[in-house]
Amino acid sequence: MSVRGRRPFEVNDTVAYGLPNPRLRPPASLPDPERQAFVKLMASCPAGQFQASDMPLLCLWATVTVQLEQAAGELARGGMVVDAKPSPWFQIQQQAARTLALLALRLRLGPQSRTRMAPKKKPSSLSYYDLQRLGGDDAEDKAGEAN
Image 1 (tube, rainbow, N blue to C red):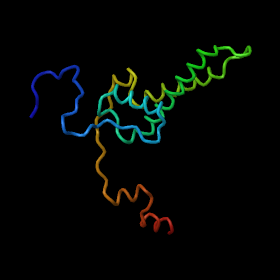
Image 2: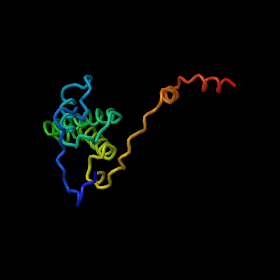
Image 3: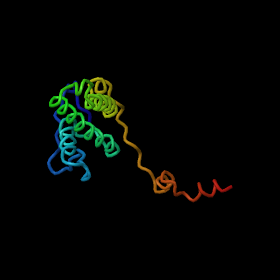
Image 4: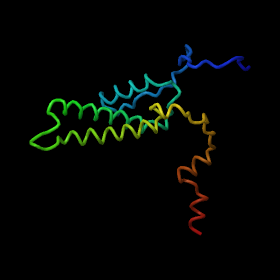
């Protein structure tokens, strides 16, 4: 059934009672500061924005966020110049900032990425044989390579 009228500009992102929460949870392997950064990111984005395939990028986002905060803290404590040379933390901070900017584009976190939303396509389910082919365990492919 279609809804009449104009779609609202903003919609509250809620999960109906009794349904599982679609938000990704941080993996157990993440240390506590990275886990907190991960949860903070998940809480600030719509529930359906990320999929399980985004997990490596999300973990990297959390790690680099903690590195950037640590570098900023060290620069605030020790200053930008140490022994008449630029602090090594300055280069670490710059590299972390570049990495976060790149990840923001990939994860659609920045304003530019949100203006043009990617088409909402779900991947089709793969058969057992397709999965085996993707995994490289297909006997036919191996037999074809031998010839």
